[in-house]
Length: 362
Image (cartoon, rainbow, N blue to C red; front, side, top):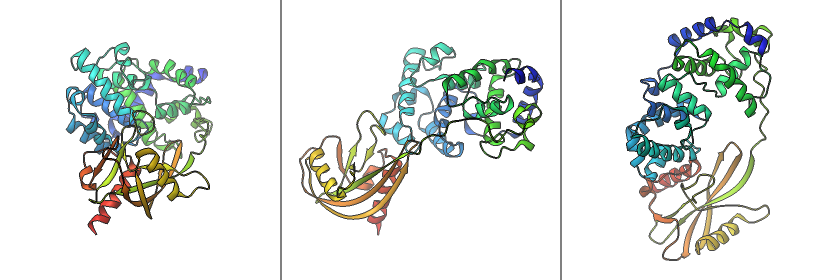
């Protein structure tokens, strides 16, 4: 890397990249201004999520919570509803916690100090670098997957970019590239180049504004970089969910616990099916042990698959009728499916809910 870093004409690289960015950048709603709150929200949403997916979520989120004060004062249920479907729900919980601190400690002004901003809940090195550089023009590196991919190729870096020590390598030399330019432009230009041209597969080298600076292109190694250890295939779990109805035709909905996967989201009661055990029997036992409910388990009505980064849920959905149940069931509500509009559900259970609404309209 060092030899390629010494050879590169940084001024020319900056000019080539930023000129390309100013002519080819996408019109995105969070780029309309440099408001730090808007930039911050967009960066949290964009982590592990595609730009096209984020746009409608961002627009709705800013409509519902246009200021730090609005987000700080909002009920968590409404915030979760705004985030419903984006996944990685701890991101938005941490964001709201951090924004409350901004309102209480900084009068609603997002701090421009790296030390203060980095101390907020959920703010790591990337988020700090992105927000401070884009909103406040601070010469901070914002090292995400796009940036590491671009510079792995430019400087022929062969270390595994999945490792923390490799990320620190990028953070060590990128400040040199931020001198003499607007950090907001340079960092966003790098991200944009990685998203549109220097892509993970089949990079568009012929369209690249900095191809003359690229060591990987010169050696024909652009398709081999960056180096990243392959993740293990996600483990599959066989699950059963139950659409449980009482005599009034209401359905039982359950709120998940305070911690763990999909914390505090609403769902249909569901349970993992052990190998070699009848799903119907498992569901019946689960309802009795968890909710003191006696139920008559009916037919299968749906199959749903949901893929997490580390896990696959294969969910078989059953309908069931309550025979006996206690008056109050902790963390549960009996509702008509149409009464669930304000509740946030995981994507898999949104699919079950949608199917139930459609069945109810037939």
